[in-house]
Length: 214
Image (cartoon, rainbow, N blue to C red; front, side, top):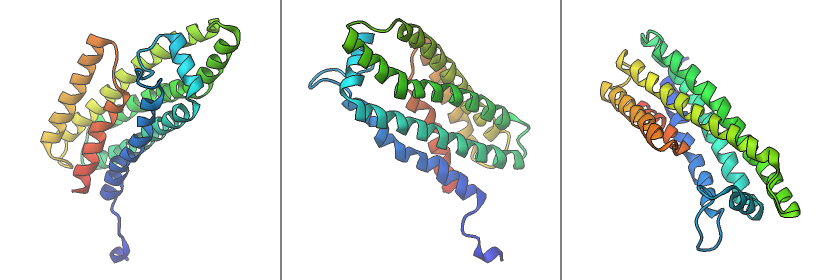
């Protein structure tokens, strides 16, 4: 019976964490949301942001969907990893990390859902009426606050997984230290710049997945 088992729980977890990166090319479509030879959409003022969203709906939509896919896949992989770490003797760090990452994921998905729905609507309204809808300004501030909270929760969650790695023998301890240092660096960057690249949250889970497979 056991001879028919091809994938172990460790291999399944590693595969999901590592293969989440397949959505990265879709995320790169954000780089096409710009004028010819012009800057990309990020960092542009609201009226330029909405104009670019309106003019480049397809790459905007598929890049946003790719971000939703990669964060949900990573969350699923971390949930499996938390189970492995718990079985390996983790006193609870991974469970706390999973909760933090899950709460952050929920906020990030809400922000991404707004990109899929509210931003195209606001861009259409702006071009039709010549002014940004008042409600969009308020929602943008709300989404900005949720993004910051998501970033804190995601880095804190991954940091907790680093502590869980150090508390068990499932993975090499150097990986636990690397995860802790990387997450602290991400939080420090957020504190200094008040911004972060969302793709950063997927680097250490990807590395963990590769190490699990090896």
